Amino acid sequence: MPAIHPKDLFIQHTTTQYPIICGAMYPCSNPELVAAVSAAGGIGIIQPISLTYAHGYSFQEGLDYISSLTDKPLGMNVIVEKSVKFYEKKMRSYVQLALQAGIRFFVTSLGDPRWVCEMVETFTQGSDQPGYVYHDVTEKKWAQKAIHSGVHGLIAVNKRAGGHAGRYSLAELYEQLADFSVPVVAAGGIASHQSVQETLSLGYAGIQLGTRFIASQECNAHPHYKKALVKAQAEDILLSERLTGVPVSVIATDELKAAGGKVSWLGRQLLQNRKTKHMARAFYALRSMRSLPKASQTSSGLYQGYWQAGKSVADIHEILPVKTIISHLMGSL
Image (tube, rainbow, N blue to C red; front, side):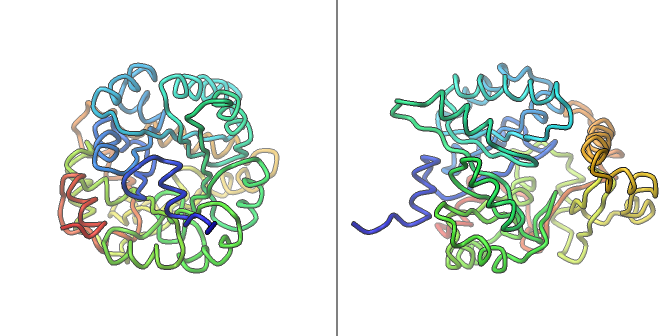
């Protein structure tokens, strides 16, 4: 019997029509966007901190609301960073609620995904609806660790991605990960039908997009942010350490150019020290979260400091409905 193609296996894992993930984004993963991607045949990923902090829902209320908008499959992002103990406890409770709500696809990042894999396996054992965990990786050594922890797939974050970008190109990263016997999803630099075709032709099982979906009608990011995405070119994207302590891809606004992309000397020492780096990253991430307005606020000033985006901005020319974006990506228009 011939082996199942990676793309088909990925679609089997997500139970979607198309091999498309809307990547988890803070603060841009509003419920309407997440639901719209799933309704259009991809899979929207719920970002718990975005849902509860930026958009003001309790996690259960948010799940219920998103589920009321679509009956299609949904996924959940779990950041498995262990630097703050109460955060892991909260994440475990969120995963349990998600499993109880029928979510079976999880995307993990920034740590060891073992406990998520174990929770998913235990909950779905003997069920006709198995669960799957995919882990964000930027190079082979992290993929090896994730596979050892029990993940079912990898999300390969390349150097053209928005947010926490990787170091390698689309092709270079696939070459590192191709030998693993799990689906590998590409993340970074994809926002056109041509880039989708090129990515899948390399052997990737699917694609994860973030930037392209921010520039959608269903995303409730500030209009100035969306206009900046339409206006920006690939060369306008730079790396800043000021959001989370590690390089993040953002649009080079005047404010960011004035502030510079590097952290202070003290911050760099804390980030490079093995004993303090996790707490330092948590500090920068929490500070960035508090610098962003809640979804109900309309002032654009604070958004102008850090507009996360990848180099796929080069292929974003207008703000469109999610369904139209996915149709364009898959070549059905």
